[in-house]
Length: 168
Image 1 (cartoon, rainbow, N blue to C red):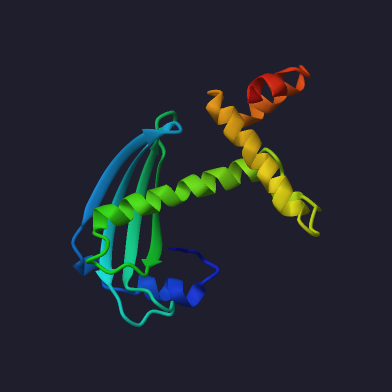
Image 2: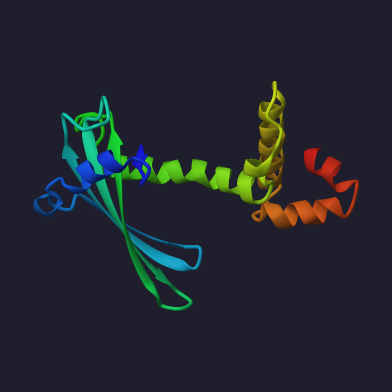
């Protein structure tokens, strides 16, 4: 679980761990979204965090450089996991954490493109049904090779036969 600012005590507790004494355990480089990124990961075993069941704490330092402007940003993120060191090595944790962002990516598309967070559909099964329709739409576009869901929606909306052709 990524620890964010709304969990102040846990965040403070994680920041106070002896990260400077812990050696670097994983480093990955990636390029995409108009930037290069280096992620450095440190992991330490914990027993009594303010998060029941936490067995390891993770510190990720992300250094991003915009390929367009050259601007560099550095951000430190903390996470906790119930997996022990024997169950998940640092490289595995790095992969799991990166995988978490695919879920965030889907939520971002659903919120920004479909304004899901602003939806006033709140009763019965309607919210779940609408989320299923949104996921179906995103999945159909992805299978059709559409990379930008918003532009795919605009293109499809201009011709009443395109949605059906997409599903066939």
